[in-house]
Structures are given as structure tokens and as C-alpha cells.
Length: 123
Image (cartoon, rainbow, N blue to C red; front, side, top):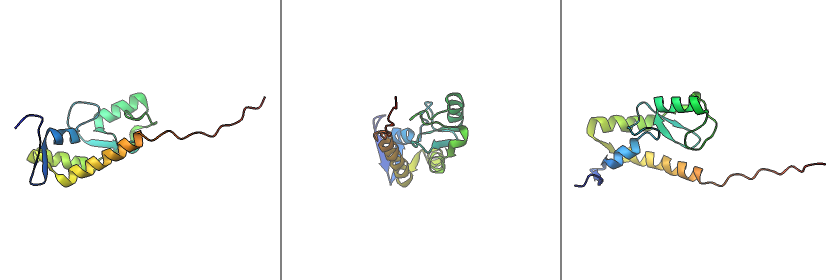
């Protein structure tokens, strides 16, 4: 089996595919105390996300204005990480939930910006 190969055994996802699903978008690790932002569903470690949002006052993926209070515990991702640490794999069901959220994120990031109403300038 090659190192990059995706393996699904008995409805379980393991290997590189599992690690990609569980990874922090700010550091190269599996998320520690995973959080997500509601603007674009970006996931990260609580520490990484807090540090980034405190410093930049915006989402690290889509630049929407954010505060640390906007970070939400990602219980689905936390459950998947616990499962991965216990079994070196995650259930296909949890994998699907995470992938579906990523699809929402991608579609949200690619939506065209809303056109603002033009206000006539009076001279």
C-alpha cells in the first residue's frame, strides 16, 4: 500500500484522507480542541484560531470580521478526532458530515459578491 493511498475498510476512513479531514487549516497538525467559524466553516485548533482572530480580527479563510466569541466548538470534528486517535480511522458517517460541511464552505466562498445599491451623488 502506498503512503498517499486512501483506504476505506468496513465503512471506515483512515490514512492520509482521515488526517486531511481532521487537520487544522492554520497549522500542520490534527486539530486540538477543534473549532469552526460559521461564516465559511473553516476549522482549526482552538489555540490557532484564537491567536489568529485576536491578532487580525477576521476569519483566516474568508476575511469576515470575527472575534474569539465567534469560534464554535466543533463537536463532529472532535468526535472524529477522538475516534481517529483511538482506532487510527474514522467512521464513514463522520467523514461524510465533515465533507458535506466543506462543500458548503466551498460554495459559500465562490458565491459572487452582492451588488450594493448605487446611491446617486448629488452635486
